[in-house]
Amino acid sequence: MASILVVDDELSMREFLKILLEKEGYQVAVAPEATTALTLAEQQPFDLVISDIRMPGMSGLDLLAQLKQRKSEIGVIMITAFASPDDAVTAMKNGAFDYITKPFNVDEIKSVVRAVLKKKGKNGSPGVTGFPEIIGQSPEMMKIFDLITKIAPTPANVLIYGESGTGKELVAKAIHNRSRVAANPFVPITCSAIPESLLESELFGHIKGSFTGAIADKAGLFQQADGGTAFLDEIGELTPIIQTKLLRVLQEREFMPVGSTKNRQVNVRIIAATNRILEEEIISGKFREDLYYRLAVVPIRVPPLRERIGDVPLLVDHFLNKYSKLLGKEVQTISSYGMEVLMQYDFPGNVRELENIIERGVALESSNIILPESLILSLHRKEKKKPEAAAPGSPLFVAARDEDELYSLGLEEVLQRVEKEMILHALSKADNSKMRAADLLKLSFRSLRYKTKKHGID
Image (cartoon, rainbow, N blue to C red; front, side, top):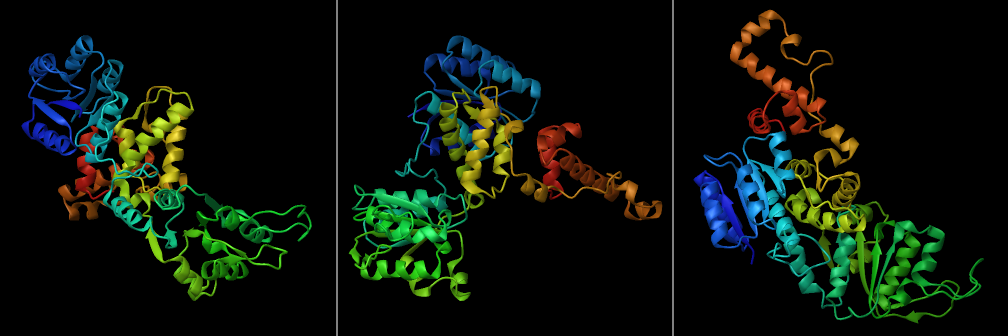
């Protein structure tokens, strides 16, 4: 297991990081200042050093330079309560893997630590779930993993439901891969992607001459998946006629190809998925109730990414590795500011949207770290989440009130309202970026965080 050295002059921070990282399975040593840290680094090998920047005596940046001079291969993460662009640039140029501001998100520090150790070939992913198809360690996903383990060996049909982009097909593949028919075909089909006139043929096949263009017999989805698993995505798009024929497959284990007069037997497990609420479709008469109960022997809900936001750092690591290789780039990590942007976003497109964001970030970035400027989020959702700004041309509270009203409120109340309105205005002007808003307001990032929390600004 990887070994980590934590260097910080604050006892509470040293103890916090030691407990956090040991709980993750790492070996952790601590040092109250840089000189002690250098001595420890000479006495035993460390895979990673996490160091504060501002400390009595030797600074964290000087410690970084000394460590890299003596042991160039060692990984270093810099942390600070006093965010400075100059310090960040210096740290990254001198070989730091990342630069993180206090107070930091627990999932963020875990993610950065994993990324450093993964690069060094160490065990940077403690607590592996045994589900390589699906990235996630949140409680919500652990429940799904447990359910998959229980139902996979059975022949029960499964209905997977959840928003678009949550990974429903990955769950279906995980079930098939752990089933007793894992060696047999897994055949997916997206019902909404095929024209209605062709869907029956795609599902059940056809015989030569059954319609114009049918120049040869064709095996449909169920014939291809015989002995294995058929995955029907967007099942809610099926027409009433196709629903009736599918119900016969489920009940009688047989189907009739288009143009044929003979039924064919089939032994196939069906896993269906939908982003619709089928119970509402049943009430409106668009979906057969008997088909629903045949499909939903075991229902599984895949949560949207905003409900398992703790999995974002893991997913970011996975997509960074994937697209750095695919695009031939050396983008190794995402900045702490960039990670904060993602952790505060609600991902209307779920995991699929996050993957696209990281792919674009890797493609746009010219350095080895993704900065917030390279993260392109959903414009319509960003506009929806923008704080309400003051009236155009009057960003300050004072400009919108008469003198008598100001005096009736009192100086303290007016100052608090002015402060809040200026922060809202700066956030709006900075497109909701706290980092850029802090620059506009001539505040440190930490100070702005404190003030937004004090005023209840999300």
